[in-house]
Image 1 (tube, rainbow, N blue to C red):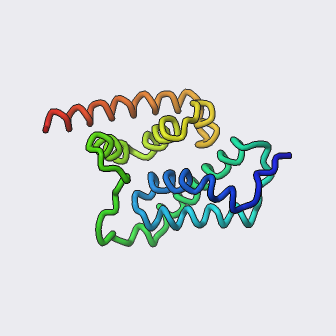
Image 2: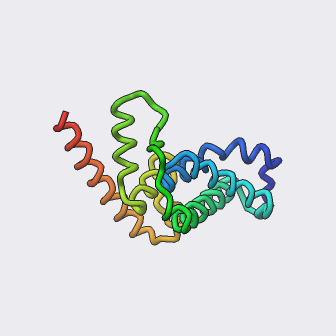
Length: 160
């Protein structure tokens, strides 16, 4: 049995990861913060029995995806209009901002695999397990997402 430490340590260790994943789904700061809070509330309430550090991280990511999906499907979100856009990747570097914006414009199924693969350093097999997809589907989605990003970034570069 694996004991991840006190809940405060787990929250401090994974809050950025959970928030980033929630933000990619919600694409707004307030909703991402709400999702992050809900994920850790569920962690504290359930205290899942995990077999290791990677299993704990995968559990948190899976819960984050599920809570984010539920929020985005809710009647409340469907009937609200944001007062202003809150898309900020937290960087002043123009190329990083352009890349981030291009990733955020991808359809959800492509955006999630890109973020898990490149930003969270998960393997194709791990992403397939986390998202409940086959490894072949994840590989195909990564390939298509890369092609979309290449095309989008090339268009943006040529427009300048």
